[in-house]
Each structure stands twice: as C-alpha cells, then as structure tokens.
Length: 387
Ligand code: XIL
Image (cartoon, rainbow, N blue to C red):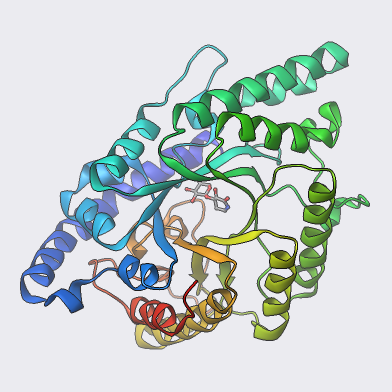
C-alpha cells in the first residue's frame, strides 16, 4: 500500500463520514425504536441458529467515529475482523517502533460487546504487503539475512498471536501466497520472502502460530477460487494441492479462508464450487468465508437493478457455502457500502456504464439501511442446515 493511498483513504472516509454516518445514526435509532425484536435481530442471530458465526471487517477509526455505527456492528456481528489494523506494516512500521493501539481498540471493543475476533493476517506472502524494512532486510540477502528474516517473522507471529491470544478465535496465518502466473510447480507466489527463506517459511509461520495461539483455528486465506474464469478453476486445484501438501507434512493448518470478493460480471457455477468445498472438507479442514462482498462495477448503475443482482448472487453463493457443513464462519468485508474499500480512492473502479455512482458491495446502504442483500443473507442462513 503506497503512502498516497493511505492519505487518499483517510480523505475519502472524512467525506463519507459526515454524509453517511450521521444520517446512518438517525436511521439506526429509528429502526431500533420502531422495530419488533424479530425485525431488529441481526444477521448473527440467523447464522447462530445454524451454528455459524457471522461478522464483518471493521477499522478502529470508524468504530470511534460513530456510536451508531459501533452499535450496528455489535447488533449484527458475532465476530469482527480488523480490515487493516492487524496487518504487520500497521503494527510495526519500523523495526523499533510498535503501534498496536488501533488493533488494541478493536480487541477492546470486541471484549466490551462479547464479540469474537478473526485475526488478519500474520504473514502475507506478497511483496509490498510486509513492512518495508522487513522486505529491505530480505533483499539484503546472504545466509545471515535469511536467519535474521526468520527471527523477525517468528518474533512478529509470537508477539501478535500471543498478545491477542484470549480474543482471537481464528487467525489468517498466511494470506494470498499462490499465483499460477509465477510459473512454479508448487504454485507459490514469487516474493522476497520466498527467495531468501525458501518455501519452508510457510511451515514455520503455521508452527509458530500454533505455539503462540494454541486455541485459535489456523487458516490459509486466499482469493479467486469462487467463480468460473479459467484461472479461478485452476486456482482451486492449486489451493487443494497446496493444502494437501501442508497436511501431509504435518503443518498445523485447520481451515481454508474463502475470501469471496465476488465479481458481478462472472458466472458462478454452484456445482463445481460445491465440489471444491467438499474436497477441502474431506482434507479435514474447516471453511471460513472471510471477506465477502460484490464488485458491481459492470452492472447497470440503476440501484434497484444492482441491489437485486447483488442479493441474488450472494444468496446463491451462500447457499452453496452453507450447505457444506464444514463452513463455520461468514464475514463480510465491511458492513455498509459507505465504508467499503471499493469506494475509497485507489480502489474505486470506473463503471462500465460510465456513471460515477458509488459501488454497492455490502448488506447495508450508505444510510445504514438494510439492503436486499441483507435479506438474502438472512434467508440463506435460515435455509441452511444446522451444524
Ligand atoms: C484491503 C483493505 O480493505 C484496504 O483498505 C487496504 O488498502 C488494502 O487491503 N484481500 C485481503 C485484504 O486479504 O486484506 C484486503 O484488504 C482486500 C483483499
């Protein structure tokens, strides 16, 4: 993430904040006053009835900015993920400077409201996602460099997983480390970490996490396995081979994290995705949906039409995920459209129809009203088998 995009995000949020959260607070309050218990039950209630944990990704600064938003999070979610506040560059911007305040605030919020926390992410196997100083250390090379790198990674995992040991129910131990285009037989993404350390960095990360967080579910998290484009079909095979290899080496991986950033312009083939989930489950692994949202930039800007299509896609997707009893968790990447990263500078996509309408990726709108997607999700939980 470049410095420019960090500044851009902050700027974007301020605009959204004034417009969205203030109005949202009023809408939420009136909703709570007017609604019966059944109308106001959050998605977590429908999910919990089937033994599933529902939640959303949050940022500490947004929880602090609006009590109404924070109330909505507590009402809807049984679990929260830190969207950015637990990433390594956010926690240790320099070797000797640690900045856990925002992550601490998320954990304190969860504790105050009785919520679980998903940890995201201990290590990210992609250049540009680890602290700059760590990647520079890797580039400096040599056998001493490899040892220093291992020591830093192990210390980071121990500190972070140990610090939040009580709160975190599952950890994304390794994020996004498979990339077919990099042409390796084992499917691993090329990175400085891989160059210097070798593929065993993944085993070391999981083993260290196991020691530091003995009660958390340890997850491999990745994108691009959900839909029908050829590279995604291929990625499913890569993920299965990778997880199988980890298991056969005795690496303590326990779940696959399906990111589920769904693309509106792609087919979703329920049967082949169901088969993939079954294969994951038959390795003895759980399944967590970790970053669910919809990218609607190719759909017509008309809000009714987009919301209808988004709700339909999410419901079909969740029906398949929830029919698989190994699926334990469903987390959306944010809760409402106004705070989605898809609407932040640096991430906003040009719409196919040329309009500048904001994206509508999530179950709540910019005024924090429930969208058709919210109702589709509630239905999917209601129709799901219990586990
Ligand atoms: C994204 C955040 O939402 C953005 O705010 C940030 O600028 C970049 O990261 N896969 C992941 C998440 O595992 O960590 C990413 O989150 C989205 C894609």
